[in-house]
Length: 355
Image 1 (tube, rainbow, N blue to C red):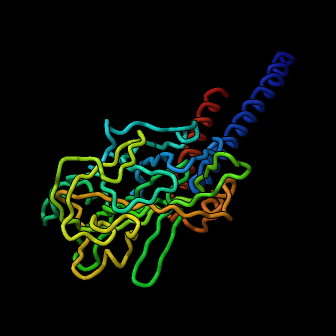
Image 2 (tube, rainbow, N blue to C red):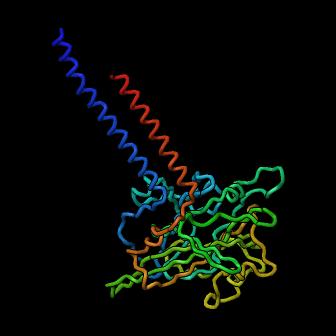
Image 3 (cartoon, helix red, strand yellow):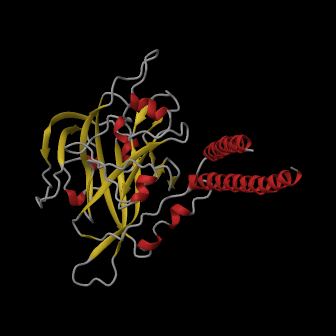
């Protein structure tokens, strides 16, 4: 009996040690996974696709992603708000597995861009954003999104949009979080929507191509404005400056009364200038409230940049210093700790039952 007991004790001890070793290794792996998730909160996925080249006049897709907010940290689908939609409705437009695994909801948009083709105050659609703000009444979804500081995240050639913000004294460009849906006026505390955007795209000529010259997108910037267009709605008709090359048609949805200089149809396209901060804020102009029928418009500017190459276009995004708010880091850390504690407790409980 003594020999049998000694044999049993000698055989069970290695099993217990192996079980404890497996448990320690498992907990260690869980900690590493949690820490890797924490560091992933301030990183960008790099698309695993080949460079895409465009000839002059080629259509360049502008896609929309889910809206994000550093205040609520809850993403919202772009078309949950009554924004302009493409003909036939929006369609999912993920190009690689990384976009899908990152939780992105990339969809098509009604914004039409053509390589090296300048556009001035092109009309997207007339959208009804809902009832106006009234005390004691629940605000519409656009107003709620603006007050919760949601941002639009647009994509051109797998490049996320940077945001350019201008005031009376400074111009600030940010390469994270896209651009805001709107803003809250400091004096009236009313919500105003950004219904006009200046889209600036930098491009670089493709080297070693002689016969058919092509270009690549190296930077994508959006400058939002709020302009209260006074307009008369008309049925959607093709714009007069449409080239008729078989590409998607530009539409005209309204006749603007007293337009700003960039929207004035009496000025020839060659003499027009793009929308500026001075045009929007001149005397007699007002921002667009986030309610009622709103005309959405956009400008497109193409800038050649010979120094910025396609291979280094992501460098400025990856070198953002303290761009992500501290609240996001702390929430990610707390989430990781909770996961580690719960899974560790489950492993300990399993080990104790098997001892």
